Image (tube, rainbow, N blue to C red; front, side, top):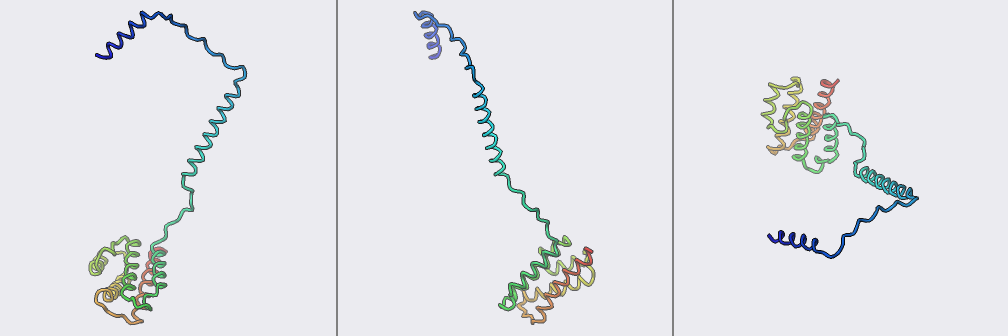
Length: 185
């Protein structure tokens, strides 16, 4: 309602205003030499485009050397070498050594044969590979002896001899290398 009265007031005041309305101004002519204005605007636009391109290129990650994923046996052998370099046996960390050694072989089996070895107990895993496994009978027997030895050290507090430690390392290496040769040649 308030706006209605303001509208009426403005309408009446413009009708009764004593001033006369003025005409609009004529168009302003462009200067004779206006080429420099277009050049300046073009340069500003070019600088802006260059700035935006450089900004987006700096945000884009640089293309780095594409890494080819390593084969499961390469990863396992590297992890085995790293474990041996830790020298757990000389430091007296036998249980930790066997824990890592068993995990290396179990993860290799998972990556290589797509068997969920790390998630199963040793008896479950051995039962599973009896029924559903591409492994040969020799490899199954090697795995059974190896995993049982690891479990004895990890859970039964068994103290292996130096010969048994060397045999375990050899068994892990043998299993990894033989499965590569037989399955990937």
